[in-house]
Length: 430
Image (tube, rainbow, N blue to C red; front, top):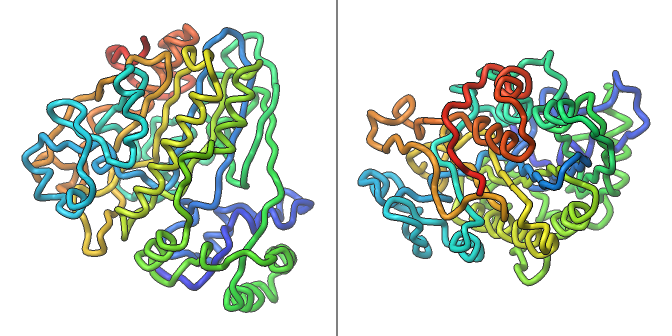
């Protein structure tokens, strides 16, 4: 697919002209359609994140993490007890040893800091899950479907709200407290009629000289994009451009990003999660934010290791910051789709279907991998390439909502998650 060196996330360009009228403002989708500049998808890049909060009745806390970029569930929770796994994932198993969870599954070594939670029953997983999305495997479409919560296998542009907002609309006594955005990525999952707020900090931008020339040439005669691009260039400052490099191919992009981005310092709390915890200790009951950068077409060991360290740090920061409130907290972390069962020739994996969902918090019944395992024999794979989904990821979120807020199953299956069959209760809450 066409690409060119560009080290500026599209959403940053979109926000470079904050006073633009709605019909002329830039969105990450419109920028991608116009430029198609990044090797795979701007939706998968690690420079965007948003955090949003809402206050709600009751004492339970509900945290939703969107893991943008399609996290590889087969690497995160490894089915080492499946005879076919070793043949499919040779490179995966060449690194640090997996951490045994039960007789079938083992945990990625970079999630080792979370093992005390697993042993305490405060960490679990749901495997072989997906949204109803199939086949096309687009980051943007997959994330739209995940956050909209529709029962369709394609985005429905008429759906303007997200499933979390539809839940908020069904809860009496709801009021807006605060919403905090770190970065510029919108969170459709919380958008809708129910009250919520959002905020974004100042963003510093980094552009290489070649990228500047590219933008100037591309938008010179286009008034819709020209002024925003010029302002974005003016804001670039002195950032290390190696950390924001996007190379001509998706594989090179991932390799360069893996080498350029700094390692996660597990001794320091994650600032976004720390702020989330501070709000959740007060009136805030519901929080959602995203962790990006999970796309791993190449150099997956480095990319996934870093992102899992970030995820572990996020969860541990929440636990520490919440204190006793952690006991009342349910956290679900979900991604738009999984990745292929086979590794590719670049030490990575490509877009797939079935994946894994992470569950954490003092309110969950952890120490277990939930779900029905379909197996990894070629005949058992979806289209003979992906992990076959055996459960709708929305069903786990729905059962969490029912347990936390007592919402009616009919409301959950028809309004909050249209066309969902929740099935039997998996029992994820303690």
